[in-house]
Image (tube, rainbow, N blue to C red; front, top):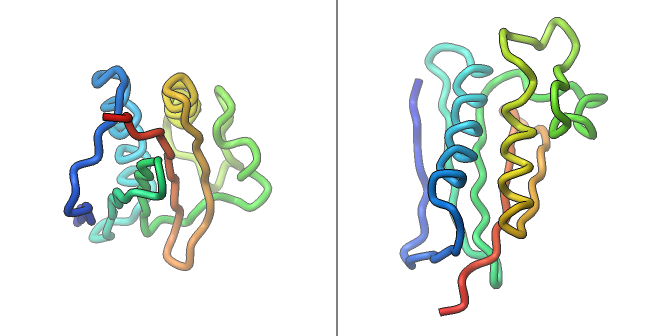
Length: 126
Protein backbone atom coordinates (compact mmCIF):
# COMPACT_ATOMS: atom_id res chain seq x y z
CA UNK A 1 0.00 0.00 0.00
CA UNK A 2 1.08 3.53 -0.65
CA UNK A 3 -0.18 6.36 1.54
CA UNK A 4 0.14 9.82 0.03
CA UNK A 5 -0.74 13.20 1.51
CA UNK A 6 -1.48 16.52 -0.15
CA UNK A 7 -1.33 19.26 2.47
CA UNK A 8 -1.67 23.04 2.20
CA UNK A 9 1.23 25.39 2.79
CA UNK A 10 -0.76 27.33 5.38
CA UNK A 11 -1.57 26.15 8.89
CA UNK A 12 -5.26 25.30 9.36
CA UNK A 13 -6.47 25.67 12.95
CA UNK A 14 -9.57 23.93 14.30
CA UNK A 15 -11.14 24.04 17.75
CA UNK A 16 -12.10 20.60 18.93
CA UNK A 17 -11.28 17.43 20.73
CA UNK A 18 -7.96 16.22 19.26
CA UNK A 19 -8.54 12.62 20.34
CA UNK A 20 -11.98 12.45 18.73
CA UNK A 21 -10.79 14.15 15.54
CA UNK A 22 -7.80 11.79 15.34
CA UNK A 23 -10.20 8.85 15.71
CA UNK A 24 -12.30 10.15 12.82
CA UNK A 25 -9.25 10.46 10.55
CA UNK A 26 -7.99 7.05 11.62
CA UNK A 27 -11.37 5.45 10.82
CA UNK A 28 -11.30 7.02 7.34
CA UNK A 29 -7.79 5.75 6.70
CA UNK A 30 -8.57 2.29 8.13
CA UNK A 31 -11.57 1.94 5.81
CA UNK A 32 -9.62 3.10 2.78
CA UNK A 33 -6.81 0.65 3.49
CA UNK A 34 -9.20 -2.21 4.24
CA UNK A 35 -11.11 -1.83 0.98
CA UNK A 36 -8.13 -1.20 -1.33
CA UNK A 37 -6.31 -4.04 -3.05
CA UNK A 38 -2.66 -4.77 -2.30
CA UNK A 39 -0.34 -2.25 -3.90
CA UNK A 40 -3.05 0.38 -4.14
CA UNK A 41 -2.67 4.04 -3.29
CA UNK A 42 -4.61 5.81 -0.54
CA UNK A 43 -4.44 9.60 -0.62
CA UNK A 44 -5.28 12.03 2.17
CA UNK A 45 -6.06 15.58 1.03
CA UNK A 46 -6.35 18.63 3.28
CA UNK A 47 -7.33 22.03 1.97
CA UNK A 48 -9.00 25.27 2.95
CA UNK A 49 -12.36 26.11 1.40
CA UNK A 50 -13.40 29.51 2.67
CA UNK A 51 -13.79 29.30 6.45
CA UNK A 52 -13.59 25.51 6.44
CA UNK A 53 -10.97 22.78 6.40
CA UNK A 54 -11.79 19.88 4.10
CA UNK A 55 -10.05 16.59 4.74
CA UNK A 56 -10.69 13.86 2.18
CA UNK A 57 -9.45 10.29 1.89
CA UNK A 58 -9.49 8.61 -1.51
CA UNK A 59 -8.79 4.95 -2.15
CA UNK A 60 -8.48 2.58 -5.10
CA UNK A 61 -11.00 0.03 -3.85
CA UNK A 62 -14.31 -1.06 -5.36
CA UNK A 63 -16.11 2.09 -4.19
CA UNK A 64 -19.53 2.11 -2.61
CA UNK A 65 -22.47 0.34 -4.23
CA UNK A 66 -24.57 3.21 -5.61
CA UNK A 67 -27.61 2.10 -3.62
CA UNK A 68 -25.53 2.21 -0.41
CA UNK A 69 -24.35 5.83 -0.66
CA UNK A 70 -27.34 7.35 1.19
CA UNK A 71 -26.81 4.94 4.11
CA UNK A 72 -23.04 4.60 4.63
CA UNK A 73 -23.01 6.93 7.67
CA UNK A 74 -25.79 5.06 9.50
CA UNK A 75 -24.83 2.89 12.47
CA UNK A 76 -24.42 -0.83 11.71
CA UNK A 77 -25.00 -0.32 7.99
CA UNK A 78 -22.97 -2.59 5.74
CA UNK A 79 -23.20 -2.83 1.97
CA UNK A 80 -24.26 -5.94 0.11
CA UNK A 81 -22.36 -9.13 0.88
CA UNK A 82 -20.02 -8.94 -2.12
CA UNK A 83 -18.60 -5.61 -0.89
CA UNK A 84 -18.33 -6.56 2.80
CA UNK A 85 -15.30 -7.38 4.82
CA UNK A 86 -15.33 -8.13 8.50
CA UNK A 87 -16.47 -5.21 10.57
CA UNK A 88 -19.31 -3.89 12.65
CA UNK A 89 -20.64 -1.19 10.34
CA UNK A 90 -19.75 1.51 12.88
CA UNK A 91 -16.63 3.17 11.42
CA UNK A 92 -18.26 5.75 9.17
CA UNK A 93 -21.10 6.41 11.62
CA UNK A 94 -18.48 7.24 14.28
CA UNK A 95 -16.77 9.58 11.82
CA UNK A 96 -20.09 11.29 11.07
CA UNK A 97 -20.97 11.68 14.76
CA UNK A 98 -17.57 13.21 15.59
CA UNK A 99 -17.68 15.58 12.64
CA UNK A 100 -21.25 16.74 13.37
CA UNK A 101 -20.34 17.21 17.05
CA UNK A 102 -17.64 19.62 15.83
CA UNK A 103 -20.10 21.55 13.65
CA UNK A 104 -19.02 19.95 10.40
CA UNK A 105 -20.39 17.76 7.65
CA UNK A 106 -19.37 14.52 5.97
CA UNK A 107 -19.86 13.14 2.46
CA UNK A 108 -19.09 10.00 0.48
CA UNK A 109 -18.89 9.44 -3.24
CA UNK A 110 -17.41 7.15 -5.83
CA UNK A 111 -14.57 8.35 -8.02
CA UNK A 112 -13.06 6.99 -11.19
CA UNK A 113 -10.47 5.13 -9.05
CA UNK A 114 -12.48 4.06 -5.98
CA UNK A 115 -14.16 5.89 -3.10
CA UNK A 116 -13.78 9.35 -1.56
CA UNK A 117 -14.96 10.30 1.91
CA UNK A 118 -14.61 13.93 2.95
CA UNK A 119 -15.12 15.76 6.23
CA UNK A 120 -15.65 19.51 6.36
CA UNK A 121 -14.93 21.32 9.63
CA UNK A 122 -15.13 25.02 10.52
CA UNK A 123 -11.80 26.73 11.00
CA UNK A 124 -11.10 28.50 14.27
CA UNK A 125 -11.41 32.26 14.21
CA UNK A 126 -8.06 33.38 15.59
